[in-house]
View 1 (cartoon, protein in one colour):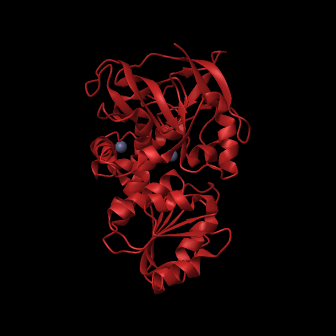
View 2: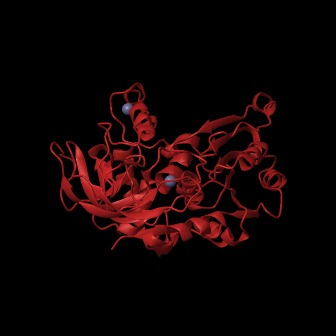
Length: 369
Ligand SMILES: [Zn+2]
Ligand SMILES: [Zn+2]
């Protein structure tokens, strides 16, 4: 079928909107009519080539939609089901999956690098008949998606699909970082670098965990209001002030948990300095691939600090995302407040410009209706 999609053909160049061909779902695949697609900071990183996936590529990894058709063998979803597209599809067989770490499924990582679906082929071709790659199983900046059944997460029908797209990336990534990667407890001090979609969900997770204080940090002072609305007890504009001594003062010597949700090496260094004795830095954001460490290494042993990475909030997609949908419907994540703009796919390059200029407060999402 012919569909409209956003294609990344060259790094650091505008994304092109093209009519492309989407092949029908094969065995254990699902055709989904896309409803909404979030523009994540990682999308911007992929476009500028800070983190490279194989191009040409149909972008988008945070999408919701409605099942239109299923391929042979699909049993977990049917036509009409509301789904979130997950960008990790735990294969169930690799050493990581069999040890309960499906969020770092070896097979999924290999498929990401190949730009295909599970059978190592693509369903996407351009107008000239040339193959296009899939973005981490999803390729959600497209009118329709063919995704693995393993990545089609059925959610409750009463959840608005514009909010549901966030369950594909920023909610599990942010909330899961707090609950799974950091195990924050009531009263723990928390500082978060980056008040974008993921950072705000770290704030929500910390708030739901009754952390205190919860310090939101961003280079843009315009993000203070939303940071406080989501649960930050303090806000630091890091373009005006060095956040490290302020975090140390607010936490009585350093935070128990620091989270870095941008992927900025300088922020990661600040977050490490801002940790207290025995503190943990949880690295969420994707830095440029060539970035090397800038951490105060002597203090890792002297202060017994730890630095951990988390991918997708260490969630179990099929089990946890429907639960996150229930929590969202109770208002736990304030997803209605996270949506700050709905754009058309033709505007995607302007959205990238706004992201570069750090003008996006909350999350901007592409509407496909
Ligand atoms: Zn994302
Ligand atoms: Zn696996």
